[in-house]
Amino acid sequence: MDLRRHRAPVVNLSAGGTRESVVITGMGVVSALGTGVDAFWEGLLAGDTGVRAIDAFDVADRRVQIGAPPVGFDPEARLSPRESQRLSLSTQMAVVAAEEALAQARLLDHERRGAGVILGASMTSVAASEPYHKKYYETGRVSAVGIPKCMNNAAASAISIKFGLHGQLFTLDAACASSTHAIGLAFLLIQSGVQSIVVTGGSDATLNPVLLEGWSALRVLSECNDDPAHACKPFSRNRDGFVLGEGAGILVLEAESSARARGATILARILGYGFSSDAHHLTAPSEEGQVEAMERALVSAGLAPEDIDHINAHGTGTSLNDRIETSAVKKLFGSRAPSIPVISIKGAVGHLLGAAGAVEAIASTLTTMHDRVPPTRNYQEQDPECDLDYVPGPARSMPVRTVLSNSFAFGGSNACLVVGKPS
Amino acid sequence: MTEHEVTEQARAILVRRLKIEPSTITSSTVMEELGLDSLDLVTLAGEYEEEFEVAIPTKEIMTIRTFGDIVRQLSSKVGAVA
Image (cartoon, rainbow over all chains, first blue to last red; front, side, top):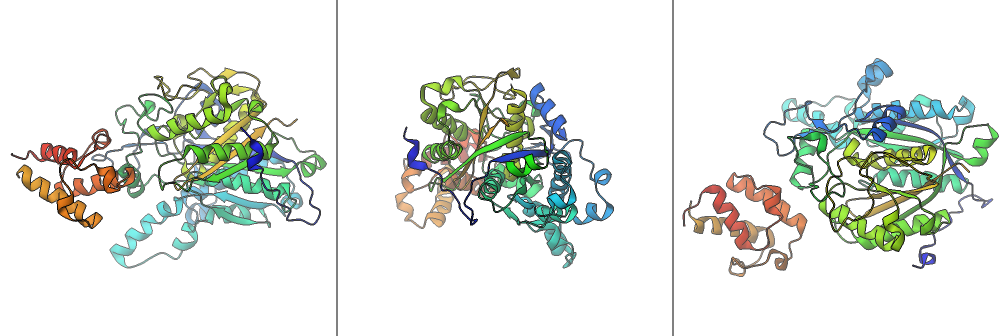
């Protein structure tokens, strides 16, 4: 395979034209496995799941009655009363995760002043606006806080305001690839010297009756209502779809020169970012598009297929995605494919949609930090068309120099990151 | 409800959606050949569920290939007589 076909463009937005190395100096997570990176990581390694019966609203007659809402998340304990009122769930989770990430990065006020905030989110504002729509049709009134609470950029704004960050500020939507693209864009901006530090990642909270019914109508959600703990079985022959999850993953990305100058602890590197568009179908994936995005990520990282030790797959647990993604991996990695551990964490934390890429990038970072590959929760039966090593369990100790993390979205937007060790 | 009525009602929904001649839709008509993809099929299934007040399980939708398959599934669910 000729990787030179997809040489990633070098974005020279600064006069100097130098390419910075990009490192990760902080991470924060809110997920169905718990609040905080430690709870998330320990849960992943243990093969736990946060998927359970939905109790936040009535799902008694619904086709899908399960979800993966955040666990251990107490906004009133972590946020001020004003923040609890003005901020939607998605924004609250993003702020709490950002607080953890920035605390780990140990940036002084003046050091973080110029930092940007670039997040990914998808339909979270649709969920947040539901009570306002309802109240309008019942009473004709909308609370003034509705607009700023539900605007798609609310989480990024809240982070910028709370932590005094004056750089780039926006939110990117590419459906299920949103936060991977956000991290990728942050990577490009730092690489080209436009920003030294970017707080990036994503947050999404879409477990509401209307959106649940919408996803259910697409027949892509698991209907294992009787056994939520074993719903969402990525790559397994008896898979029947994914589970909607809620959560946030925030990373502090930094120019290596900046991190070293201030004596920061470098957790890992973002080595590369690849992307493509399928130009194929609103909901069905394209193998060719996925291969192209993965290839670009390798070229961006200056790596060859044999340099990748592990793949954190998109792995939604739908019949189509898992088959196509397996095929794409085999096409790119050839005879090496069966020896590369490929996992999905969606059986553990659900599909976080706009935030999925971020928590998966964090899982990938933790994997390379600790040389431990979490299992693919709920992998049960081999599918002849999905015949790679999906790490059925338990967690595996092995050297992991590099991880390829994939996000393949509705609408055909594909994004891949390569994460590697600090040195 | 008779099977004939199920057929006519199901055909009418397809005709409305696709804006084609009713006579082009027979029991052996392959849905894909009408230009319907997977997203169209699940959307259509939702319309049929609403129209006929039935639930069509996901596994059954995945087996639909022809218009006749749809009529058979709907007839079974509404208890249509021949």
